[in-house]
Amino acid sequence: MNAYCAAVDWGTTSFRLWLLDAAGEILAERRSDEGMLAAGPEGFAAILDAHLSAVGAAADLPVIACGMVGARQGWVEAPYVETPATAASIAASACRVPGLERPVYILPGVAQRNASTPDVMRGEETQILGLPERPGGNGRDLVCMPGTHSKWVALEAGRIAGFATFITGDLFAAVAKHTILRHSVADPAAPFDRAGFADGFRAGLGSPAEATNRMFAIRAGGLLDVGAGGDGGSQLSGLVLGLEFAGARSRFGVTPAVTLVASGQLLDIYTVACELAGIEAVAADADAAVRRGLFAAAREILA
Amino acid sequence: MNAYCAAVDWGTTSFRLWLLDAAGEILAERRSDEGMLAAGPEGFAAILDAHLSAVGAAADLPVIACGMVGARQGWVEAPYVETPATAASIAASACRVPGLERPVYILPGVAQRNASTPDVMRGEETQILGLPERPGGNGRDLVCMPGTHSKWVALEAGRIAGFATFITGDLFAAVAKHTILRHSVADPAAPFDRAGFADGFRAGLGSPAEATNRMFAIRAGGLLDVGAGGDGGSQLSGLVLGLEFAGARSRFGVTPAVTLVASGQLLDIYTVACELAGIEAVAADADAAVRRGLFAAAREILA
Image (cartoon, rainbow over all chains, first blue to last red; front, side, top):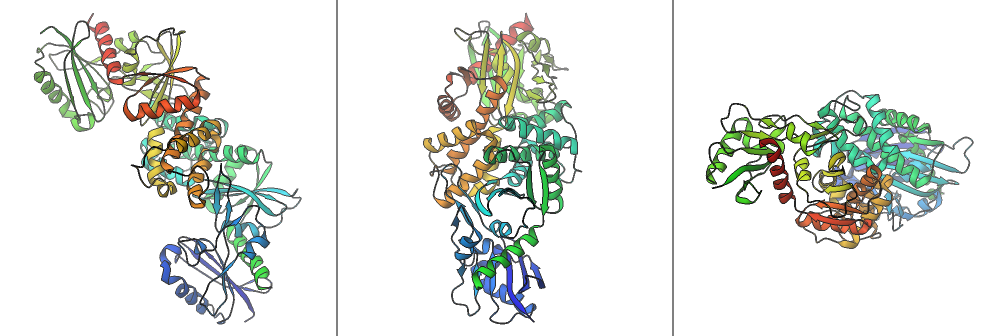
């Protein structure tokens, strides 16, 4: 078997491994829910070995990993590199796990040590390294990575120039379950209401200052049977996404296009949001991006 | 005893009763935690009778009540009156509780049936009726009523012209306890950090679009040991209040002064917020306001 390295995306609650050849092609693949939380301080090496054995990896095959495995609470802390970050600065700061015969490198996250909006990422920087070149890119691109904590990343000549994390998904869940809006978002399985979503989105994007009033208005509209009507969850979802897009515009300026690193339902909902905001969305697959990013880092580290 | 009426402020979780003479002076007073939730559909009459007996009220003494006792889930629903609302329109829509010998009137709440920001209040309208005249008032006043759901009310020639509810306190609690910020707001008893509060407030007021990014920045600043530092709770509190003040400005314009219906810690924190926003705050006592408002309504209803 002509394996070149194993690429591992090791998050808080998930583990992905790809066995790659020297061209970055996939020879074998593993996935499980043995994330950082499941591993505990003792379990990282055992979990990794089990998956490497299962794909028949040689004892000296190098491993490149990214994600929360490199956090302070992870296996070995790989301290953040600073913005502006490049493929080279990230690869150069990879930490080799001590005490193992096998070379296992953990990639660092990226930190923005800016007094007004300090920010951190861990794992997303590797996806960024693996994004396909944007055809006709003008050297400055914006990437949107939706999630519990959505990240918007400004790329300048391929470097991570700056970024902003929005607690959109986390906020939605907290407001929907733990405020007065729990009475308006009673059914989490309610079908997506596009009109209500659009209404909330336009309010969040157009009048972000009124966001916490608009949240109450979702409840009051239901009580009075006026307003957008329909499912309060779709309105609230639109509102918090509108607020995120308003924030991205405030931070990075108006953008004609964005690379959307997402799949499934999140891709659908952010695609609708981009349409409403007049932004062209180009979807990129997160799994493919992180695999390519890990491979690119492996080439730098193992060269 | 020369009692004229009993005035009752009956909220979700609290009960207040004042026995008043014909000049509105207090003859006796009762308070308990037998709010709407504790009363249940059967218990309202029994609770009221017990307190009236305790102050020696005559069997035919009229009672004027306001608050959640008049909600759909309360004793008798007193349907909302519409904005613009006046003392006369509120008193004219009081509902007499059926089936009692004693005349018991429940005041309605106020609804704003506006498709973009529908809103409701129940209880606050009575406080508004009881606010002292503003010396030198120019006929248009703004009233801020802090709480779990803060209300800003625009008065024009004494009428409730419009209002906006912000879920500030509810949002603070949900974000502090149920998002990633729980790691940054670990100690609810941490002392108030004025610098952190001011930092958050200026961010919320000045850049409301970036609020959900700023929330994450509180967490990231703690991780990186940059930014405002100190207690994350004070920063978050400042941020959500700044967002509220930005929303009030967006809805009602820049105001030089506001009547602040609050006491205790809420009065302190909103007074700081007003200073930071360059707004003169004139404090008014909520208990005195609701008592005076109930008395004013009694004079209209019983005339």
